[in-house]
Image 1: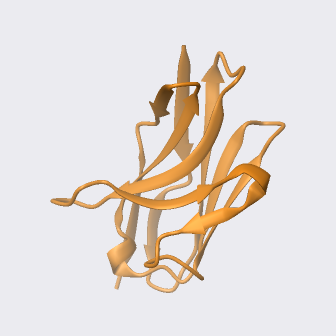
Image 2: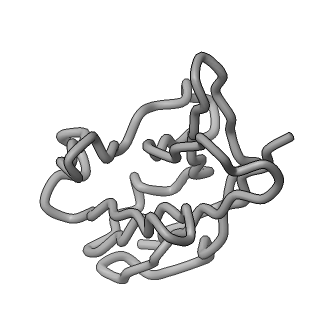
Length: 115
């Protein structure tokens, strides 16, 4: 059994920064945590960023240049550094991991950006 737990969300003013983390508990062997998604009220969940093999990264256009995804291999922890936050970044942020064909999601952490 695997559980992913996001942390680091909160309330911040526009232009501020937050750092999200996603940690795994349970059976972590073979688990790779790779993506951040977000879901704003009334919207579908959207992909935000991914870390790829070789530590290459990829970002949604809406966050490119402002967000940075990183991974701590030893701790199997995924991070998302969010700078220059905008009110439209307000959402619940989720991390996603996989082991083989199985996907795992965290419960999400709320990020609220005030104008």
